[in-house]
Image 1 (tube, helix red, strand yellow):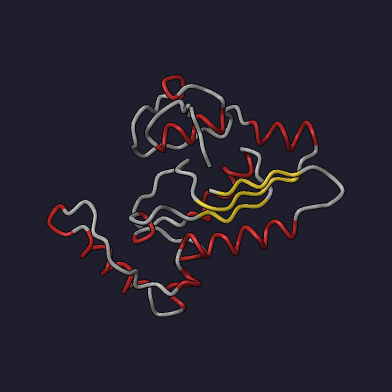
Image 2: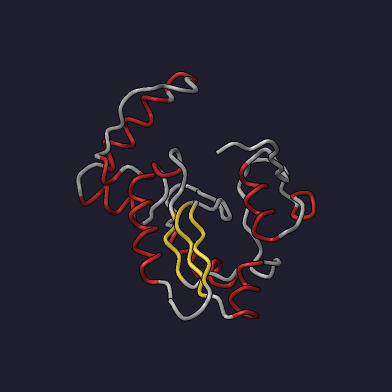
Length: 172
């Protein structure tokens, strides 16, 4: 891609993602930095509008940062909120660091493959002693590497979307 201009409501992902969904400025949402945040269920949502006003089928695959990623939480517990925001189907994951402390469909797959603790240990080593970036091969097989796994999930969801009405597949 060759882009000459790019605009965002925020250079940080949590406020930018909330702004994309709601159409509101991060300052109006009260989130201007990367921090734990929950998009209110009654916040404006273009996805809800597409679903409820225009009959779109809606699905989400990937990370949102629309809810906190505290240790021990399972992202699937956010399903009622994400449905209120307009998504019919949701298969959410977190970012690399949060994947070590929250549950989701992919962490279940890692656990089943005996890789969850290996991933957690590897992540701890990567960021040991304040290290910001460490480049080395992942401990995950390709099929369970988040970007590649999400590609497969997105293709699965795409195949389930209706052919007789409009749809939105949000992949992130």
